[in-house]
Amino acid sequence: MRRVLAGVLACAFAISANASLAQDKPPLKLGGILDMSSLYADITGTGSETAAKMAAEDFGGTVLGRKIEIVVGDHLNKADLAANIARDMIDNQGVEMIFDVAASATALAAGEIAKARGKIIMFNGPGSIRLSNEACGPYTVHYVFDTFAQANVTGLAAVKSGLDTWFFLTADYAFGQDLEKDTSNVVVKSGGKVLGSVRHPINTSDFSSFLLQAQASKAKVIGLANAGGDTINAIKQGAEFGITKGGQKISPLLAFVTDIDSVGLETAQGLLLAEAFYWDLNDDTRAFSKRFMERTKRVPTSAQAGVYSSVMHYLQAVKAAGTTDAAAVMKVMKETPINDMFAKNGRIREDGRMVHDMYLFEVKKPSESKGRWDDYKLLATVPGDQAFQPLSESRCPLVKK
Image 1 (cartoon, rainbow, N blue to C red):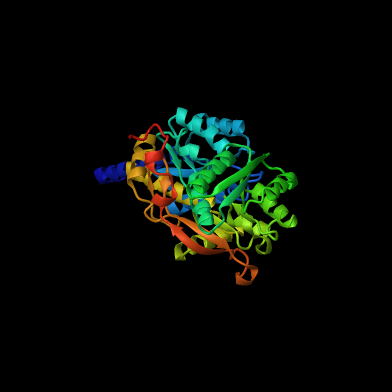
Image 2: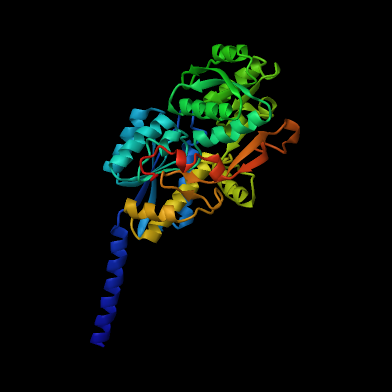
């Protein structure tokens, strides 16, 4: 009996010790560097935080015996602050992976910190093509969209339909400049002409002088190479100036469903735009969006849906690799196709670009909409290898040619 009792006690002690050891493991921290309070707050913000937490919960809450913890910081749309947050997250908080980093200037700054420290960073909100070109890194992933794809899908469709002269209103920072450049290239290659452009400060409230210059150009299309609140204000003020009634088209080169909701269908109807995700695209997107809406009271943007998908893909790779080591995890991520509500047969290339289908939408007329958020009708699905920059044109030093 003593031997039996001793054995039982030994087993109980071992189980208790193992459980205690598991509890003693530090949490696996994933850090979101987000715009929580500036012009991209609706696009990413608390919605991106919610999406990341949903992914962690759906995964089971733990991986490799470690509790998954989501931490976030507000970069206030300032590049230096984004870099400082990234540095603090990695050096002091023990964050293993950074996600989102809405806005391109902030993403470029945070990306350099993650690269120097050998940590994975996954971009969901920013669009600059530089993130998978000159600024690429071995552990950098550009997940949702980029300026090349936005330009390629929207610009090409517009020129093909006869809208072949363009004037750009461009946000004066990395993203806007890249979006103007990439769209100009598409327009010219397709046989169109660029009649001019004007740069505006980011987060400006008055577009009147810029819109007057665009109107005076007589261009068939006024391309908005901006995002978030800037896009919303430019569209609204353009309508007030009677630009579309005068025969010119306003084309937002990056717009999200939240932007269209803010503008309203009466003003936004007929706009052509490219998106990586739409909540009402299929059964999978609707199921995810319904759960997201229960928490946020609004549908997810493509950036927020991309956060969920990228966090889930990362966690699955950590589990498969059996480690959080960046090189091992990234190897699995690049070898594993992405099939979920965001992408079908998506893949991460050697330049860090996640290649997936893009969609061309037209904004519905008020009479066509069944209610709030029913904003888009699908015009075309563009395969990823046609939407995104081909590797043969890549400027990423990691790409072998």
